[in-house]
Length: 269
Image 1 (tube, rainbow, N blue to C red):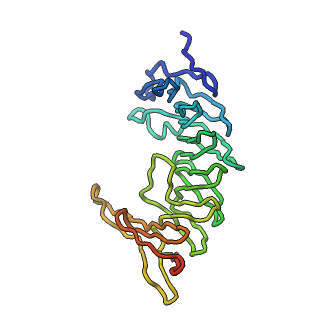
Image 2: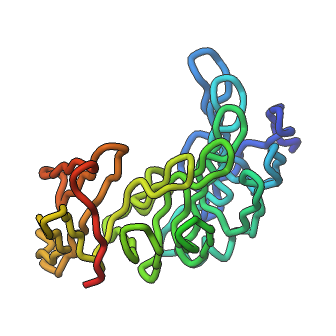
Image 3: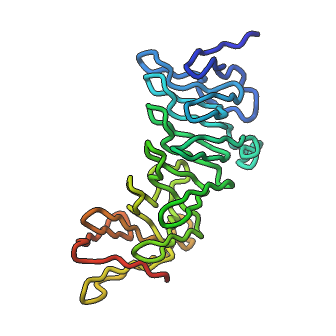
């Protein structure tokens, strides 16, 4: 049997035609936009494709309607009693991609591209690690990172042991409630100049002061998980805008402080 091939700007790709492999997911091998343009292709075999930022293994590829790649999933196996996450990690290949003037190498779960072809985010297996230099020190992640068009770090989820040396004090960023599915909109964020924009912490006390002294302290707390009954860390979240400092301990309550009058101090608990 001669496999059916789809011609794309990234080569001829063979959609899945045999789902007898225990790894194969139950999904359409081909999806199209209402216009007829290719939306996604689930490949029969893991295939090396070439992008403008390097070569990458692919098992599922999605496209923008204009034809450029949107997301690449290097592995897309079904997790079951017969095929575990550990098995999927072992299936994955080490890929290296150019991100700005640097290169990133890891076993990747998903690579998200902008329409113009630059890498918007990379999600990795949590057994892997990626390291990124910032003006505050090195950040290690076991989830992935989000980038701007120049390859600068936009956001990231750091490992628990991270330590950054900021103008406000030594920061130990960590978000215990991060989204494990993708690396976009991470809790540790930076602006285009590389300056700290936002963070979550369960290891630091956040202190708001003015000339007369301490105004308010925010301390991470432990609550009972309503679903499991286990202890649950509630992080302090800080967003640094040009004119304000926004601090919250939950999604419903946020307090805003004027940066022209108040100062932020980070103090380890």
